[in-house]
Image (tube, rainbow over the protein chains, first blue to last red):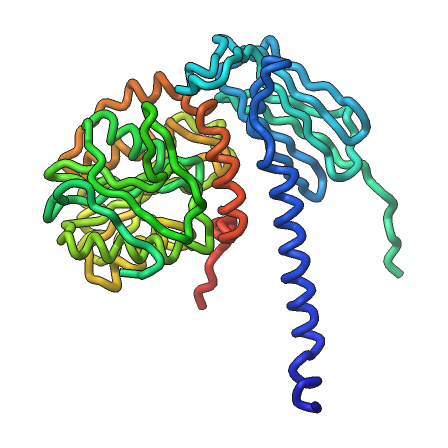
Amino acid sequence: MYERRRKRSIFDLMSEYMEEFEALADELMESTFAERPSWNTESCCLEPLCNVFVTPTEVVVTADLPNTDHKTLKVEALSEDLIEITAKMKRKMRFDDFGITHREGEFSSLRCQTRIPVPVDTKRMKISFKRGILEIRFPRKRGYEIKVE
Amino acid sequence: MSELVRIVEKKPIPSEATMLIGLPDVGLVGLIATSYLISELDLEEIAYMDSDLLPPVVVLHEGLPHAPLRIYGNKNFIAVISELAISARALHTVMRTLVDWGQTKKVKMIVSMGGIPIENRQVITEPKVYGAASSKELLDMLGKKELSILNEGYMVGPQALAMRYSAEKKISAIALLAQSFYNYPDPEAAAMTLKELSKITEIKIDVSKLLEQGEEIRLKARDIMKRTQQEMTHMKKSQEYDLPLYV
């Protein structure tokens, strides 16, 4: 009995919690990340690849927007923590172009929405577009300073 | 060879060929490069991998079913690709089986192609390609061919295991890794890798078509890139950014 109690030390429990947490994170990632099509025939949009990185001072959102003209690029803040990126494609694509013959539809734009995980100042965002990669840098909103005594 | 994985041979397999591996990884560099090479050299499908460790997926091409992990070849080359992101859990067994199988076919050398993630990739016009090798002699050969050497650091993923298992089996192995986007398909990096490949093999390929098709490839590769990104997270691929400890 004593042996069993000793085996489940605080480190074992932490390790178990971490494993559970990782499994939950995986589930969450899979449910939000991949299990929906990357196209929408109603809106004629393809969903581009998009990523969000949080640094101590900034939130950096990037999106891969090949085959688009930067003049048609639009970044819109839909709410405090949700932005939408859209860009028109230079050349429209159909399912045929992907070798798919059992679906019908034409795509003329790339569009994605992404959540900003921490408070940012959307008015001071900086946008660049190089090699078809959109990069948006949002300065993070500062909280309050804790005085060190 | 592992019992969990088997390689089913459809045609006679060449002996003493160079084996090229391009599995989904950073920027899909290896997969794009190897797929383009298969198409340009008109290699035919000679074998495929069957395994309970891989998802129950079949890929239809021109109406006919194919395994996602396939092996192509001619009398000089064997090329391995996967149209499916390989899970971190299956990767060890898959790579060990490929290297073991290569040994039974007396491959001359195993060359893995892939990417090295760099943060400012979008400002780089010509991605640099680095080489790593399984022996000192091969490293010297890469140096003589004026390839940049990956001296220190971590390698994670298919090319890391190809290198490790090849070294164990005393098979010559080289990894060619181009600076690339981490999680966006990078046909330009793939083209640079193929250019460097021509320095160490007899493969001479015109990459202009690959560069022309770059934007289209990036759109077509979105889904496999997304799933590969999930697997890279599981295998702690970001460890390649880590600085190694040498005391």
